[in-house]
Length: 408
Image 1: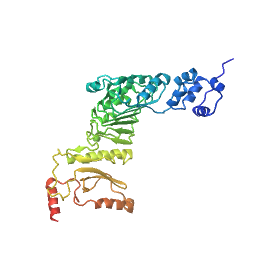
Image 2: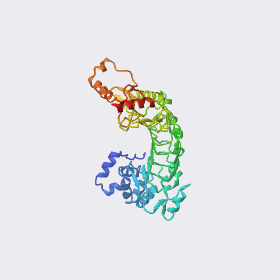
Image 3: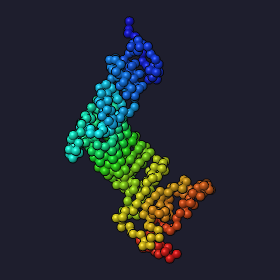
Image 4: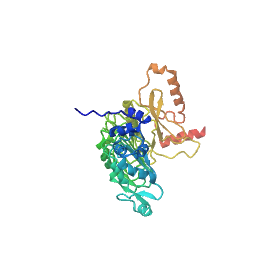
């Protein structure tokens, strides 16, 4: 006679069973797999308490797929709990690693900062490599300061990891190439990591999984942002305050097809806060960005970007000697009047040049829309001192305008 199939509970059924007051004899008869499913409805701290009941429950905990509940290591006590989990609850799926607490540190990694190593030589060392036992880890957050010193290759070998966040790790050394140890990585979020190095193009090894890339204030990250142009799933790209280069005019019709949010550093021609070397460069850059917005059908994509004329530009000149005269208009902003989009030069005091429209004039139906007309009129009314100028005047023209303004 074939053996009777074991009953399999869904997670909702398991949770309901866990909420009921069960007969100990009935609980004892439950299969290990059923107990593991029930455990999977609880956060890791609760599972660690329940596993103490008996050997059967301890064995069930080892096979439990722990839910996406964050366990944060921010003290020696939590570190010890995590170290126990590496064998008692190895299927942990989400983990945050912070500083281990006063007068404690993680064991120095490869190539540590020697000065910091000497300063912390008397600290109690803790082994960070134990987290390599969490082979089913999906999310890893490494944050907060001075516990890590050097390079830790074992932190970059989780085959199922989908989300990685590393922030405020002052002496944690690693390279972008090390991310190849996360073949399923979808989201990368790195902030304030001065020892992160590498070429942004090395992320191409993850091009078929990456959806969000945020690398902020990591000055040693270099390369051309266009190396990520053919990542088919990429929706978010933030490379602000990196040393990544490139030119927005190189973006083609089939590049960055699904981007919903983008910030490029000022080291990219046309990036946010980019400083133009010539006034004549601006129209081609603005047109390239406009074509990108139109293709993505998202006019908010660059709404908080602005650009400037570099002080090193041959087109730059100083302001007028009379401080009451409007300053030179060396800042570029996008302008939107209902359905119309353009760009204009302005100064920091709110004096605007004429609008350079990027789209054709509205048809008669749009002209008849009084709400749109009023919006356009209100923008036009802001143009005073630089009326008739679509670009910053030359130094000679500017001084003439200021002379006339002073006389009035």
